[in-house]
Length: 521
Image 1: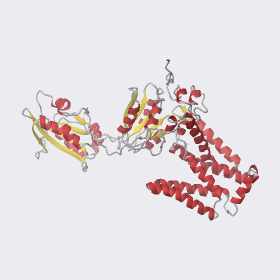
Image 2: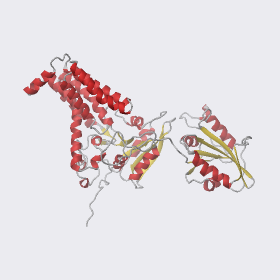
Image 3: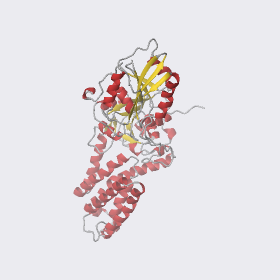
Image 4: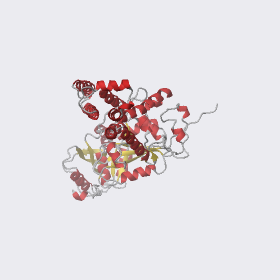
């Protein structure tokens, strides 16, 4: 078995013209693999015996299609068909006279158009394990690969993590071909290129790089390919794992690669010059490059009136500040700078904290950890039970903590408002960075007060300004002097009417920024 593979776990055995030798290799490779269907055939044509061997994976292959489009036509057109011979197939290649049996099978006898020739054993085994059917013919060192995939995947459902009130309801599923089809359905342009590759030496997971050839920045696709080709690993099971190989800023909690389960968002991003990567077995598609602003954009922003979308966009930016800074700011003010508060508010806080034995920083940390535990429990528990534990658990535990004198009512309000604000951020991966960094601001505010809070926010701003996502500054269009910044601001905090956004953003190749023009009447 070891001699069949090289150091990269690729099969180095060569296809032989002798069918018996090929069968021996197949039997060795798939030993103790009971889900592999292997069948020997013998057909007769013009007093000639034609020996064949078929291999596919039960459960990944449409067996009915193989029977109707491959075996049945051969039964009808070949005289004297025999299958599963007890005597087996005699060793040694045979000569079939003037007619080319392989070409006859490939072009005439099999009733399906999706066929291809494979000349390497590694390619044959890879096709079989993807759900295709391999047909070996005696006397030929080329195999017919029949597309017969019938993969166990769920149907196209409504997006769960990026739900909208208006707009398409479909979302990607775990099938790579379904994901690419949903994009093709929206972009009917031959300039939309889909390059399919594999990643993982043992999983051989398919992924597709999708981009507009005339809009993408020069060199971006090659850069992405080079980064993926630089790694060798056993397997990947989701696009999130692939993202880790491509994110060089491992120390930053902020994602520089955007992920989404919405086909309309991917299609619009591709038409702006961005590159998408769809991964088999994953319902999330990656988008390159990504900026701070793209994580605040929701699909229904572009389907609603511009005034409504602008209000929602402003609300998200305000909520992001609350989600990351409110607990730390509360600690800084109440712990170090009470003189800054109005007298009425100061008295209200003092009354609320009467009888509380813990310092304010422990109050906040206790409630924040409680809400994080409830959030995690809600995710892990199934369905309705998860929703119940999030709501009921928060109310019961929060009320019990107040009555027990562990925390004040104002801290409960602060922490609840912080959690609520984090849910308004459309991207879950981006919101997770805010959840983590609020603890950083809580700590620095507890140590240095308002000075620590301002210093912490300044450090975050400097960090964000220094991030670059595949050649594009992360804070575009807020801090960049790149060309097209004015046009990009039309889709920044304010979402201007669609007809005013005549140019594509800075992701697009120079010279291809115009995307709209008004027809003269």
